[in-house]
Amino acid sequence: MNVETDKNSFDFNQFRLIRERSVGRLFWRLKRFTSNYIEPRLHALGYTDFKMSYLMFLSNIEENGTTNNELAKRACVTKQMMSKIVGLLEEEGYIYTRKNPNDSRSSIIFLNDRGKKLFVSLERCMQEARNKFDTIVGHDRMEQVIETMAKLVNELEKGEQ
Image 1 (cartoon, rainbow, N blue to C red):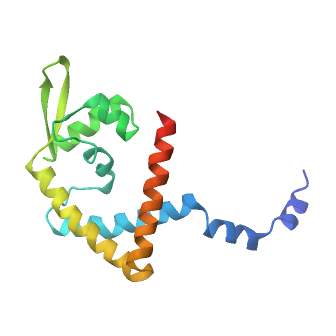
Image 2 (image 1 turned 180 degrees about the vertical axis):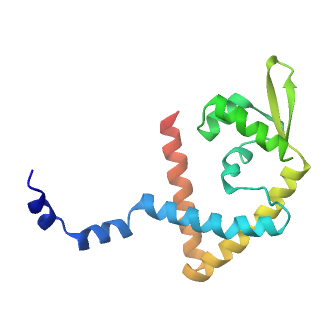
Image 3 (image 1 turned 90 degrees about the vertical axis):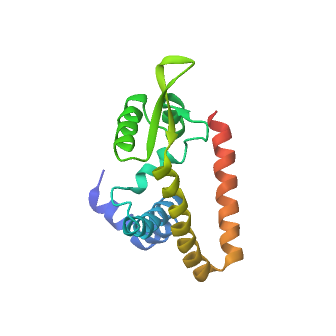
């Protein structure tokens, strides 16, 4: 392969256009903005140990509790990783566990009061971010973006099952 020929045939202008509209990159950039916008606001509200990455675990805990295995599956991590995260979140006071009455080898994970209060605060912070998005593109257009993303995620997840 001639490296010099490859350099001459590679169009950086075309590459930049593709990169700027890459769905994965756009999602990543929005996620980064959202995390960088919300996390400091939550820290200011007293959740100084909170990281946005905790959300993929905490947001999958149901009202009547969730087993470690189910939580691992929903968060797309191994059971071992989930056990480590559960220990961390329990230590930081967001969750508590109880032995599973149907299977003594497992525990059921619940949000505690601090975890529930976090979600109330998170909702306010997310609304601030949403207001910023609405200011930029308009409320109706943002609603269309959310509807489209929800439809994509729901349909794509159906195919994974």
